[in-house]
Image (cartoon, rainbow, N blue to C red; front, top):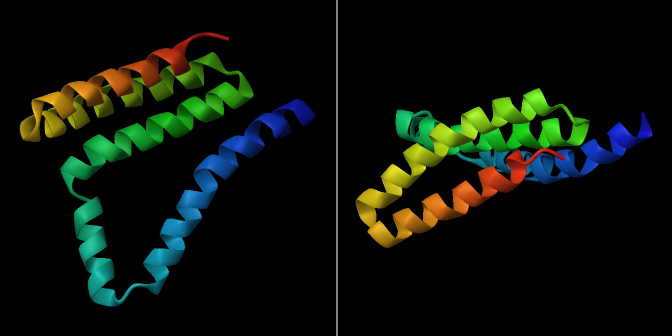
Length: 116
């Protein structure tokens, strides 16, 4: 039981602190800024790129901490389309940055997807 808690603590620290910072910043914003943030983050482009990658990384981290390989696979299934959509968005602006994004995110998917 303690091994599971020891494995989950770094995961919740890594994902909890940024999430708490985003929530506190959002609460402090004026209503006009809040509306602008909601409109920005609820676009299809945002959800398909950052949303899939964030959710995929979280699910892979939880699966890794709990040593449940099916969770890792589900997380990787979110990471792959997120990587494709992100690289397409970056590719439109710069070909070199697009390739760098693909290589970096592919390395993350490969190394986190390796069975323990």
